[in-house]
Amino acid sequence: MRHRNSDRVAPALQDAKNLVRRIRARSGFLTFSETIDATTDAPVPLRYFSARDFGPPVAGRRIADVGCWTGTFLRLLAPEHPMTMAGIDVVGPWLAVAQRLNPKATFVPIDSIEKIPQNLNHAYDTVYFLETLEHLPRDLEHAAAKSLKDLLSPDGVLILSVPVAGLAALLDPAWYLVGHRHYRRRRLIDILQTANLTIEECAYSGSVWESLDFILFDVYKHLLRRPYLSPKFLSARLSTRLSCRRRVDSTGIWIRARCP
Image (cartoon, rainbow, N blue to C red; front, side):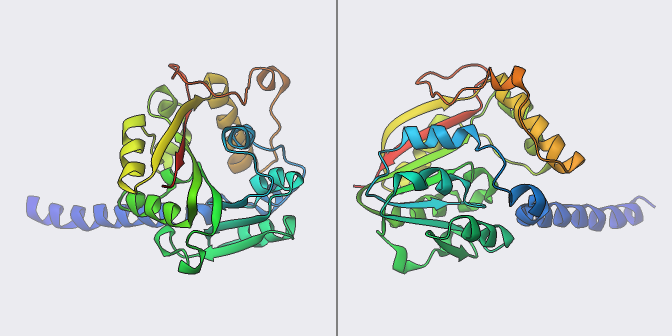
């Protein structure tokens, strides 16, 4: 009887693992909402202001946003008139929205981060990779770093941000539901240095208030199916400033790296 039960349990466990794998692989489709993600009325996430200020001046530079989603970050940069702007992301309806909202930018659909077209090698002076690495399968992290490095022109700059390991992981619903990773500084540096990128600066962002704001955003978007606007008591406590020191409740880690 014990053997017969185990014969039944093993396939069931494998089916469950396969289901989780499919959910993670299709997480973009599962989280995309035409009525929420395609609107121009939604506030710009604070991390985009942090990214703009953490990177070099954008005027006159060729810029790529890898993992661009609906192009909100490129819309933030557009008034400063970069020479060239491109968004790169996996194939999905979000790219059609991004193109509609950014008619002067170029958007490149890809199947996977390690399959970025070679004609884009060395094409950009600044590459942004914001809150995207944690969505990738673990075995693609080093390949992602190499692809980002290949996009950069000589002396080009990479701006990367990811959730930071620590207390913030316990307050992140995506950590429980789809396995989004949270990184330590040393781990990120190892990944980028393996790709022959030179680390220039590390910084930290966020607070427990930002964690609460993100939880409310998820509740509104995925449960209530409504746009979310931070309440006044929260928005007054949120900040775009980055710190060179990590706090107990820091939510994000930022790295600026340069291509030799």
